[in-house]
Image (cartoon, rainbow, N blue to C red; front, side, top):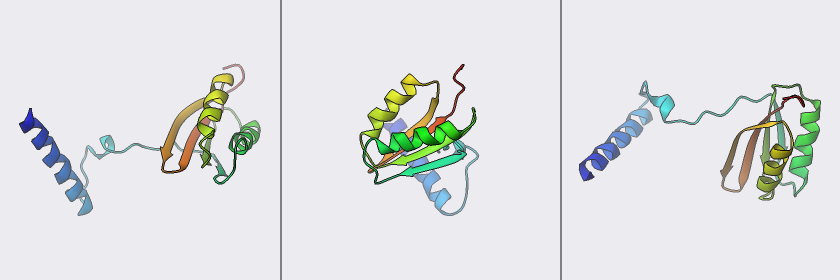
Length: 114
């Protein structure tokens, strides 16, 4: 078991070293998380609750079904707000991320009939 862990560690280390030298593995796509493509951006960083959600709703109302909205927020309450919003609407949360003090949401607009 220890040997397998050591082999894995050195394999990852070698991959990182080769990438830093400009070499790319054919398996590189397995190492990265790809962000969804988006059509619209709402930058609500620095805005207090409920502004990130309200700005997102206003933008979603202008969008067509199938288009994607990226929302950037710094309000920790946005986690709860967007979670509830997605449950109550036909819209789809494609991805959410939290890095440091920033929260990012990718929402796909859905038809009301979906």
